[in-house]
Image (cartoon, rainbow, N blue to C red):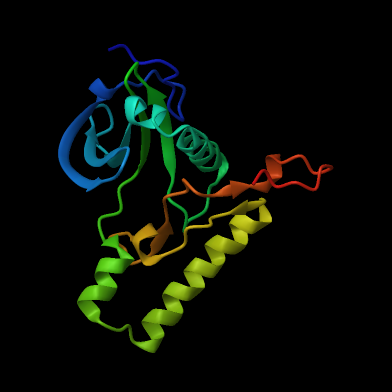
Length: 180
């Protein structure tokens, strides 16, 4: 199954064969998220794998995946997950992003039960910083919840899962419509 449309952020050809599977870290309606190691760089990354067959059953989600890819391609911020490349095969779509070893904020909150005020203020400040950056670029996340906020091993967070995001920077400004 040859890969197509497969350049990484350094202009190199990329395919699924460039990654070693370490483990499955999440499952969704249209695919899964894997922890992988890049065979060239040795970097540990997250690979979002989306089944085209399952996508075809719900065409509206095709636009969501495209929007997620387009938004993540242009967003660079310390508190927004970085997408390194995207590519596809005949059967699957792939998004290669930073792997954040701290996991979901949701799970951390579940283990803690409650955050101390200083910890909560720290996380809120990082979320606000990310949202202000996104809004400044015309992007609304629209699915902000603890499950879509990941923690790095350094304790800082990143917003992720831009499948429901809306990019108003590409909308027809003269129509008054937002495409909904």
